[in-house]
Length: 165
Image 1 (cartoon, helix red, strand yellow):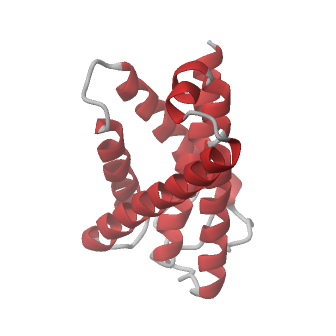
Image 2 (cartoon, one colour):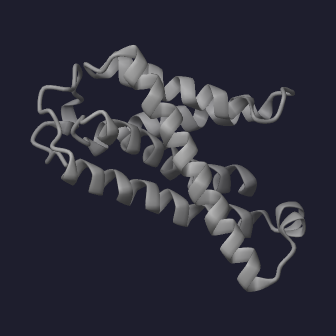
């Protein structure tokens, strides 16, 4: 039960960061209500996939395709742009994750395999800075690249009147 809660504690912000970063790259205004719902739904799907006896890493491919599908269905972005930004977001997250993990384990002198195997809480907490950076980068990109106000095809009731970033 605790492992499941920790998975969602780290997974939801991670997917929100990936989605927000992807949307910012295609100049779609960041609507956090929609992003939160999509991130939560995708995290549930990823959790189910990771629980199945399938090849490790398949969840990353599924996440990439889900983000691209989400962008295609909810925005006016093309298929090719949606796939490119989804892949770019996953690659950016992987780069940030590698950098944070390298710095953390170099500074603390802890054994990475020991942490992965024995300290699930610490391993999941290590993911929170990268999630925060992805969200921060998405907001910065959205500020620098003026979003297209008509980019969304859908709206949720609680997103009306919400500021676009």
